[in-house]
Amino acid sequence: AQSVAQPEDQVNVAEGNPLTVKCTYSVSGNPYLFWYVQYPNRGLQFLLKYITGDNLVKGSYGFEAEFNKSQTSFHLKKPSALVSDSALYFCAVRDGTGHNFNKFYFGSGTKLNVKP
Amino acid sequence: NAGVTQTPKFQVLKTGQSMTLQCAQDMNHNSMYWYRQDPGMGLRLIYYSASEGTTDKGEVPNGYNVSRLNKREFSLRLESAAPSQTSVYFCASSEYIGTDTQYFGPGTRLTVL
Image 1 (cartoon, helix red, strand yellow):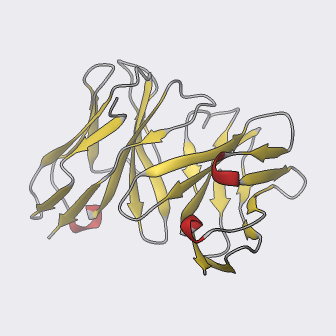
Image 2: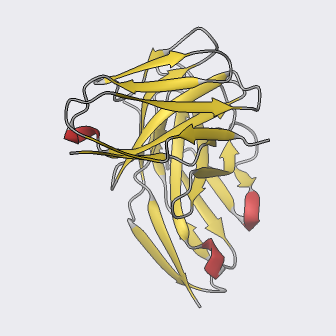
């Protein structure tokens, strides 16, 4: 079965420090992986995606993520956190092959708190 | 260019009432989706429409129906609302259902008493 796990409900980091938001996935075929961010009372906004190619993907607002096939992970990272990065982050996966080809699966979300 | 719009923004229903959530996109996207967001559970796909004229069930379709009225519009109907359907509902669209980014509407907060 397809699934996405975000093991941390909340991540706290000081402004200027590096941040990591973790995501692991399970699909039967090739994974297509996405990160979205949600600010309070807003819809989700796309940050970045991995479809194929270079395992390190760079996205919006200085975020990047690394696809690790052996560990089935797609962790979101940023070298230097900003207070304005505080939001809810969702990892999502789509199975690139097989019966569930057209369905997206989202993780439960990780709340990122960046303190001044 | 408004992107994805949803109406209404808020709604309170009594158990057993029906209602339709409206969604429209002006990006000429082929694929559209309905999700519900519940605390601690992320987003779950209710129904999707890969292209105009087609609809398919997602992860949690029970209690809902959808209509892809035309390329722009994709509505979600609750025929007999239940308290378990209290949630925030998001509509999204993408150019194609494949590898494309989804663009989300602002959401509808629904409470069923």
